[in-house]
Amino acid sequence: MSIDDRVFSVARCGDKVVTITPDDLIKSAVSKMATHNIGSLLVIDDHGRIKGILTERDIVGKIVNNSKDPNRSRVSSVMTRRVITCSMDTPLVLAQQTMTKHGIRHMPILKDGRPVGMISNRDILAHQLVTARNTVRKQSEVFANLEAAYPGINRLKHDDSGRIVI
Image (cartoon, rainbow, N blue to C red):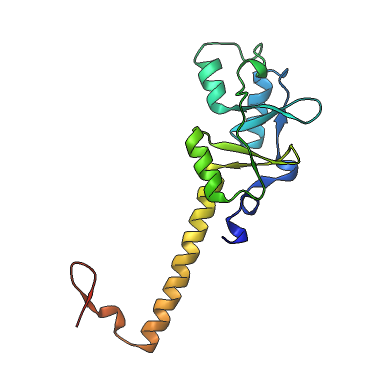
């Protein structure tokens, strides 16, 4: 596994971890999400420890769907308390499997028990797309070099199973 296949290679880390407290209002949470164009917020206490996570799904399912007032509802009343996390060294494939297994789209990244970043399914998919495009580009270069060295190689006939017919 290469170093590029770890969470830290694609995650948003550092100052970009947007948080909120359990006592904040949902309206404030929605405003933060909109300002930062994100779909979740880490809910932390005064000591920086994770108390939960608040997602768009939480807000839609527990506030909007139940006609609750976001101006009076607290984050603590709708946040998800059981937070699935990973570390910076977690392999991307394991992070993706964990998110799929638990039905989550955002996963906090911890270092020494403190949040240092967030990874989303979108981050992983974007990384996979870039990786796939780079692979295709490299394979196209190899094919072009083969064609230059052996003109006509791309016109070889194949049978139904993909074998070259001579």
